[in-house]
Image (tube, rainbow, N blue to C red):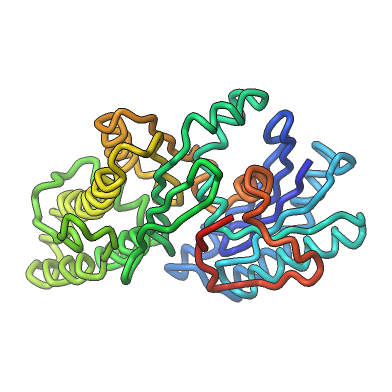
Length: 347
C-alpha cells in the first residue's frame, strides 16, 4: 500500500492506495472558505492551514483504514507554493523516519497526467495493465489554474510535453475573467454557473493563437478583450448581460482548448488510442462534453478524470507513484521541494 500526501496549494490531502484493490481511502481538507474572503489563495494562510490539518487527516486515515500495510510514502514535491510544499514534504519525511519506509517525490503534474486512468484501475485492478496497453499511445490535456498543456504517453509510458501556454493558464483566465466581472472566488465555477443561462455567441472574444499548426495556448488576449468590452458597458448593462458575457467568455476558452487538441490529434495521424482530460478546469461540463465529442470524431475513447481527482488530491499522487515509478524521485530524506517544477519529458 502507498500513503500519499498532497499540499501544493490550498488543499490538504491524504490517500491510501492498494494496487491490488484500488483506493483504500481519501481524505481532503479544502481551504476555499478560508481564502474566499480574500479573493484568492493567501500563501501564509494556506501554509498555516496545512500545518493545522495534516495531523487530523492522518489520524482519520489511521483510524478508518490503518497504516500497517503501508510499504512506501509518496509526496508532492512540486510544482506549487514553496511553504505549502514544505509542510507536506516534512510530514512525509517524518513518517518515513518513524516507520522506516522509503519516501518518493511525485511531480504534481504527473499526478494529473495519470489521473484519467484511475477509474480504469478502480473498475478492474487485475485487468488494468492489459487495458492500459490498449489505450496507449495517449494524448492528454491538463487544464488548471496554473497549467495548460498537451502531452503524450507512449506505449512504454514515457511522457512527452507537446505544448503549453505562453502566458495565462486557462483556469487563470477564467478566474481573472470572473474577477473583472465581480463574481468572486473561485471564479471558474461561478463563470460556468452563470454561463448556463447565457448565449455563447453573444460576444465575440478571441480564441488565442489561430495558426492551425501551432499547438501552444495563449489566454492573455482573451482577458484583455473582456476588460475592453466591460469598459464599454455601464454597471447595469454588465449585470443584465452577465450570463451572456460568461457564456461567451467560457466558450472562447473551451474553443481554444479544443482547437489545439484537435490539431494535436490531426498531427498525430491516427496514432493515439485515447484522449484524456485532467486538472481543476476538467470539471467544466462544457469542456468535458467538447473533448468527448473530439474523441468520438477521432474514434478513440475519452478519459476524463473523475471530479474528485481533478483538483489537488493525494489519490492521483499515490496512483502516479505506482503506475509510473520511474517518473518519481526516490531521493528519500534528501528530497527537496521544487516550486517551479515543470512536467519533464521521459520517465
